[in-house]
Image (cartoon, rainbow, N blue to C red):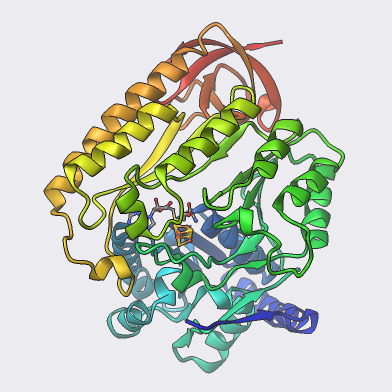
Length: 475
Ligand code: SAH
Ligand code: SF4
């Protein structure tokens, strides 16, 4: 699929600010009429890139005069930001959107919009058009920057709108953002993907790889570091391709070095690295820069070479293991995590054993494991030899069993040691506790109070299980 890369001009962004002003007048009028400020509810499915996009949707909505609400029942505007990576995520988004129908019946002025990867597919756009008549507008991933214009038009034209263009990939700067956290920030450094792994829908819904200019990224991080942000997670589908489209020699390691030169006490994370492009230069950069966390998320997807070839991953298990061994040698106490797919078409039980073998050999801190989900129009979905659900589930359960035991053993090695964590907030599972994460992204529960939130603290680990560690703050 040929796609154009379009740099959205500053004038085009300024026009969006004009639409935001027009919307602000409209929301002011609504406030006067209703006696309270209209509210926006943004619901996000999927990966960190979607979370980052939702922060821009919320930022634009706030600029247009809305207030945020976590309760859809109170909302005057609902935006559902969808994911398409697996069928499960799509069905969930569709089912929740379905539940909003009754809200529209109660509040006729409610606007409902849907965006993101799921609706950047022709057949899902048609589903929304035909089966969800109460959805007012839809926009694909390439149209995010036009959200103010689309919303404005939805009020003016009083007709349903479908903004969809999967033939261009664009890059924009300068839109308002409302970050969920006051100390952790997502920073997209590039968008899209050129890899076309045979199972994956991302290149079709997110367009071609394009990098933001280093100066724009550095300026943004400098500003946030001054505000006291403590963690930056650089996002891209394959960050090791960063810069290849910029026409200079500047690469991802150069970007990391420049970020680390910014003043401030912060951690730098990034994801995702594709093993075919993760260079020794990158690993050496992680090793030498104190601000970069000693953690590498390096998805291997499958341990068997025939399956990897079918997946179009462009590395083999030997190459992957050598890369990981280099990382272990150069980065002291490196934390490794990965993504793994079970039940790829034609994968045999023996070939699945190779995946387990890779888990045992590398000893990952943790692994995100996925049951293969056929995605429309991807090569793998058309392959003969799709694996029955029962077999996929059995392999998935086995994989969890093997990995959980490895994670538990690795966690228990921390008992008695003191580690640095960034405290994130109250625990979601234990009301009395606070939680944070260490540089390897492992969850740690502590006794604490609100004053610790957003701070780095040293913690002595008292206890560990598979999913978390428990520790005491050392003053
Ligand atoms: N760009 C990243 C991953 C983005 S998608 C990378 O290449 O690592 C996140 C993860 O979802 C993938 O790593 C893969 O493990 C999983 N995934 C993608 N498509 C899938 C599918 N069709 N079925 C199951 N899992 C899938
Ligand atoms: Fe999907 Fe592969 Fe691109 Fe990752 S690298 S987003 S798995 S196509």
